[in-house]
Image (cartoon, rainbow, N blue to C red; front, side):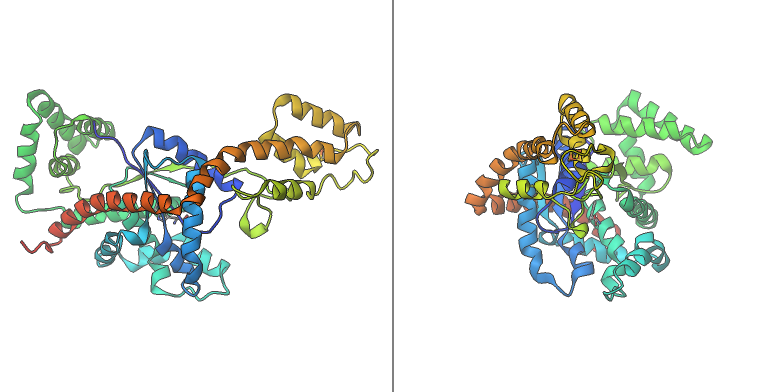
Length: 400
Ligand code: TRP
Ligand code: SF4
């Protein structure tokens, strides 16, 4: 059976914090058991906005990869790599740039938004305008079926889908496509071939979308089908020509509700974070320094957890009994804030302990990390090369 591929990328921002863990990484760790996954460091993407300060990218990349591993992303299950080490991404980006309408790029909502948000930077660059196209290349080059993204990135996946459709429509009409497709149908064998034909007709005559879904599922289930034939059959089904690039779907990652030290959402820009591998002393110090219910001035004043950021962390880290204890203790002034914070400190340390342990192995021997990435890059490149062969072929650049 053809397994759907998952792909996601992250800009190298340096050490990750608990918000990343609860928002993104836990999700990746889960997905790696369910799908073949590709996770990569989007270092070129970092350059689209930080082109004037590239020096920090390398260290941020290694720190981030160690954090992935620390969080439980398993290099034996997922392929981990660095975007710039698979230069095929750039080739696909270039080739697609030839047929990408400027208006499509200008209309991507993040384009104007980010320019306004980062007004201190000159983002009227070619690279920044082309950033969604680069992301499309990242996705399409692996023929990813599912892309886990946050809400803000959904328009980019939609953009990618439209681009794939345009590409297939424009370049998917290989000479003799129809004959080759009919040959491929025959290879399915009597029963499946008949079902395929029936579903194809149902879609093309009645626009029956379920028929497409059913046919796709059937094709995905067939093991012995070559990539070439699979693409032809997908394309023939919908009447678009050969499907060279696969339209991806997205998996919406719920925005992290991880509260930071001040009760706002945990974010580097609010300076309210605890990093994945923050030292135990520092965790304790940060939690002890957290503001509490401002109306609880003296130890003897009763407080209200609803007004307290520490309570939000109890909701992440404490069990029912501890939460009950905190609620009760706070409202009756039965406990002090220092006491109340202790289980939160312990909860965080407990969550971090296995991460710190896993990370230590890599910190002691950084060549392990380099090797994991080198392997991942090699594997990713293999897949990328395969797609590029088809892309070049379809654009008349194969030079036999
Ligand atoms: N643009 C994403 C971000 O800024 C990172 C990214 C780059 C990405 N390429 C990708 C995510 C491909 C998913 C798939 O967060
Ligand atoms: Fe916050 Fe706990 Fe102090 Fe109440 S007792 S104000 S919940 S830290």
